[in-house]
Image (cartoon, rainbow, N blue to C red):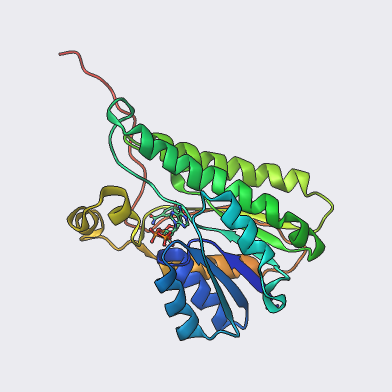
Length: 249
Ligand SMILES: NC(=O)c1ccc[n+]([C@@H]2O[C@H](COP(=O)([O-])OP(=O)(O)OC[C@H]3O[C@@H](n4cnc5c(N)ncnc54)[C@H](OP(=O)(O)O)[C@@H]3O)[C@@H](O)[C@H]2O)c1
């Protein structure tokens, strides 16, 4: 059944594809992100009756308050929160990592996500709605250079499970989506290098934003008595590496 979805991080990748997927199925969407011109492009493409755009930074508490308070009546009954905005910054090992980048990941992926969730919980409970959080395989499988990014995504997974407990009896559904490699702007943002991004995805068949958008839509379309707690998915071309061992000779 169609409703209204609040999708964070809809200026690119999974969020933009999700906005298109949900609108194609008759949903209304609220799309957010810092790049206002990309949000306006979505409004033009999909229609102002279906898309409400609000540009703000996930780290700006007052802007989040304002965005929610200023929702037009046609978009105020939020049935689904898709907590998608997030990023990885840097690939250096912890001992050489940039502390400012660590803080930006935590402020966006953790603090921003819980802030929006907290502020939308009253309407989500009133609507018996749903929350879909974008975690990652990095929540479960550590890799060198994943340090704080993996930590933020482990938080998202565990927060999702905790929300399920707290929301028991409210009818609100919560799902943690945990993808492997999806080709988006993610690696460009992480490394600042288009060449690094091309080389990571080159010669593989990664998942696409549309693959994940379809998964989110499928989760949201299940009967109201079903809750998918976690979904982990990867492209066939990606799997697991072994443990590292230091050899002394
Ligand atoms: N790509 C993958 O392989 C992969 C795998 C597992 C999980 N994920 C997760 O999936 C989610 C979406 O990532 P993606 O792959 O679609 O990456 P993407 O193409 O880089 O999109 C990230 C989105 O997050 C938004 N965002 C980042 N920082 C923000 C901030 N401070 N305030 C507001 N919005 C912010 C960006 O918008 P603006 O820059 O316009 O603000 C953009 O719309 C992330 O949470 C990511 O961790 C991705």
